[in-house]
Image (cartoon, rainbow over all chains, first blue to last red; front, side, top):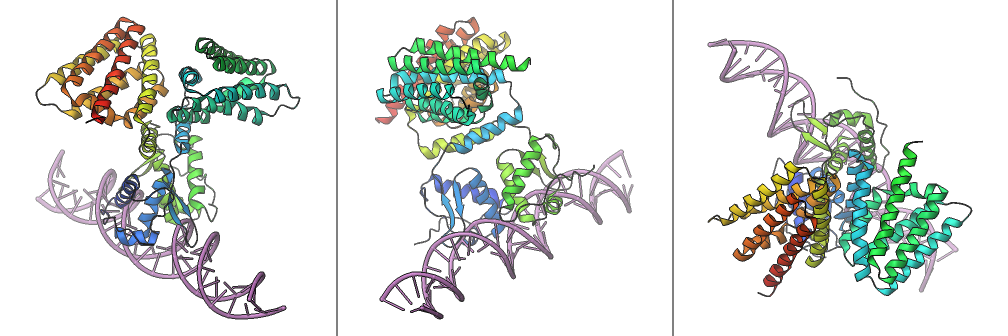
Length: 242
Length: 242
DNA sequence: GGAAAAAGTTTGGTAATACCATTAAGCTAT
DNA sequence: ATAGCTTAATGGTATTACCAAACTTTTTCC
């Protein structure tokens, strides 16, 4: 294992920022590839010419940015991480929580995303994916008919349908935004499955949507998407006035 | 100023995580309102029963999450911040950089977002906003005609047009996604303004788009949006084969 | 000889302390 | 009154020491 000496001594006064930026740049520059280990904290301390505390704070920043993960023990250390959407979704969720955004705005946003994704999924998705989507929608219908309602199971199924649809676009950005939106949005989705009548209608509607996607009928699919959000709005209104 | 004693001693072994979560929960719980000051590091150290180092690392995490900001000196400290979209945009940008996503996917994503936003902006934007948009588009045209091309100025103008358009939807989520996309996307936008012919066409097209938005003609506006992305694709292709 | 146990080593995590730099408030002399 | 000085509070950094986890090496014992 040969060490890499690529870091410069840190500026005094804002050493933490300096260090984290230098390491971030090195990662972006592929000096350290995903899975690779950064030098140990004590080694970095020497290279940057600082105390270990600031090195640790800098690494915390990178960890929060989801660029590295740390392992304890011998042969442990900070390892460069493959980029994932997790942290972005989390920060979006934080934002939504703190801002307490009007539910109608969330619905509006999500409906528009859903429409776009649906159209793309029809044109870019493979036949296999479309069939799988339809099967999963049928599966949701049967889950719903079950005696013991398991909300976690239902939520999981609904979530999978959405993610699968997003993946059919072959565009990772839509997958990302769908995951992010699911993350900060699940409470409203659950509402639809809480009451028997809505639950039934929603599941049927998913089946119809998937069917039209499978048949390559974008306008009809969009109609069902529209109906889904009609139901959601109705359902939330009902809850509000009770 | 009365102190708040709401924190419990931190778990040993993962004190940093524990502390940051406790403080985050307190902020979400409105124990500390935006603008309010958290206890000083030395005070937190006492309340959590830990060393100052872990308190600092925990605060770094919260700073990275954009929940607090710090000021030095007397009457300084960690202050709860109003939630902003900045950090989310930044993390998306990081994600895009690290993943090196196909430019075509970025364009596809952005074009779909632009279409949605445009339609909403026409129906929700005020007359004043629409006029301002048009004026800003005209302004961009005149900037372009200038002898000394200032790419920073042009980029800023283009960015402002996009953000203004997003704000016209009255939906903070669209503003957020537009900022995020701008953040991780600017390099491609610049391409359009680098060469004289594209620069001219793009600015004219912005003017036309804004005009149709002002006139309340969604289909025509969408046509111009489409043309914008035709130009962008052409421009990037030209660059690739040179 | 081989497996189990013990010791050693590396590395992140925490603690305690001291000192520096910055900032605001209060005080003092003019 | 105001310019300048002093003081205190607070974040930022450095140093040192020790703990805890996880891997490696050595020793022990059957």
